Image (cartoon, rainbow, N blue to C red; front, side, top):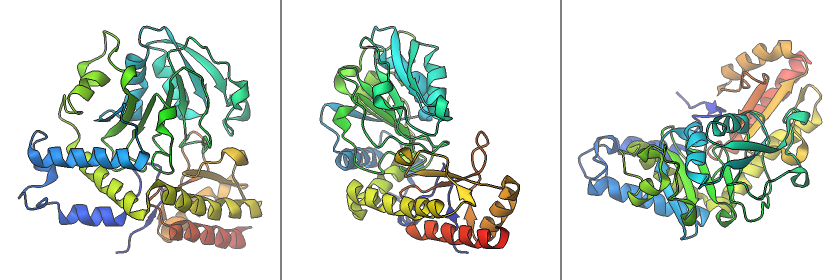
Length: 360
């Protein structure tokens, strides 16, 4: 049976080349006689897998040598607590920029550990735009400034790296990491769940500057202390071994495509196909401000919402799945991460035109 075009927001589509290699190596990884799922994380086989994955990620993102790369667990939801536990460093407050549902979750969790200053919010626009940088009311004494670089639900994305002075910039990049080049040195900490552009759910990537670790709150569990994990090569506790292995295969795949510059061009081309169509029709619409539209998650709605179920049913019949929008906003959402081919977006647009012709 042919594969579907999977527009899920996460866990999301993976490159077919990666899935085929993982299948071929399932019972016997490179002559070891074992599946990666069966390996000891202390054994030489997995240590080599882990080291290669880290080296590839460092290469793709050009991570400076004074940054640690950690493979942890708990997802971005877990990091919402782990970040303030590690990053307050004796300070009482942190700045957060609220741009949608995921940054709101980050704010709610951080309030358990710190005084949170919501320095800017997109609520007035119903989270359809990024607050202009000049409107941010930052505290120069804040421990850090936190942003969500791409809001998976609302479909807004930062297309710039905000200047926040000497205060460390922290970014939840769960849904746009590895979709384009990033100047890591402009961030104090970057984190992201894997299940969008990196691999299967289960591993969380953290990239953190050396001088920002080692001052975790006394209540911080050892497994969540960045310094302890860094000193143990992310193996203070048993890491999510198979998810790290798949992530390494994805890193190889991205490198083979030409790296992050090529990946960005691929993603811009896909997004343009869909956004250009949405500009030509009044039957469907995208609510996001044009300059802040996500290249990864494209929400769109039918003017006549009574047609939603018919649209989704027709899409599934044409082997396009997971297009239903998040329950908090409704409508549709096409998540078009790295592994989504251009053909998938072209098929969606062709179907949108067909549906409009028969129901418009």
